[in-house]
Length: 206
Length: 206
Image (cartoon, rainbow over all chains, first blue to last red; front, top):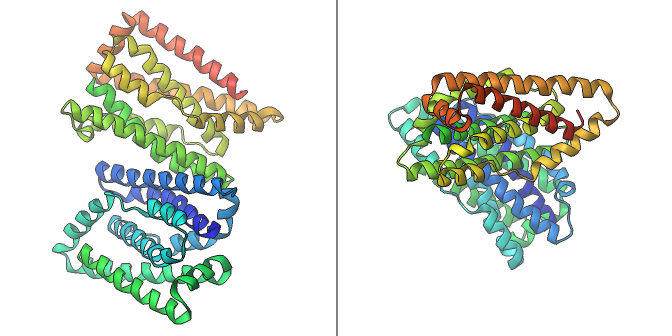
């Protein structure tokens, strides 16, 4: 589970810096503060993972190194140009990550599952996102269409990077195969993730 | 004490975003993570202040508004161009803020003092800064000279903005006058702050 913790850990760090960067797009101080609080929550998750890895004798920095590129590429290829795109990305990105780890949870030991669940626990901050996005698209059809395409692109890029990581990291691939059974199982997994992505988009009104 | 809490609260928010921004200058992932943790600590302090203000019936966002410009100006006028400048700024800026509030603590009620002390409690993260800076300047005289000038500028800009804020906000000015006695007392306060700034610079080896 070193690789799983490591990819989660670098995910928290890169989410932290992305949130801080994208918060500049916020039109209000309230929005900026809400985003800063989401970012701070990512760091609390990072510490949980760092601790769990240290207890297993693993240095989090060494372990994270192989995942830096895929996650940085994901963020670079989904760089929001508006505050709303940025909000949708927070929400959808968190959801995709949570889905993925829920899917593989069956292949994990109880101790590892406990850490992962703790780290992916949904925060109250996503409520803030839902309200902002729903309000913005309610009476604005072109904004809604634009964000719908944006959400689709987020999922596509996430799957691309996930496949890239799995092609490179045997331990993670084994985990997914254990959880899903075989290659058909992996295809089914991606289909379930797409369905649950569509539900999340519906919650946002897009 | 609304104004005192408000200026501290916006100080935390602006420090959060500055830290996140300046962390990009870090040459290592370890450095970036250390800075992200400092930033997350600022948000914990912000929540303490938000809570303390809410208990007094004050909305933190309304209260912070008058201080946005002075703090943003301070940061804009002391924009680090290297990782070392950025590290010195974290350390020196925290120290200046802590000194200032220690100076006025005598004029505060015990409840307010408790909140301020909690918020300004030194974090273990500054040790990271001290080590990085001392190592960098030990065998590099030109770097040391450059950072010495930089430290002086940080103090100068902080005092400029503090005077600007005090010229505008009666409640804060009253606090400082109560704590120091009179205008001569204020001059003595700035002198003590300069002395303690010099001590901090010595700790950094500059």
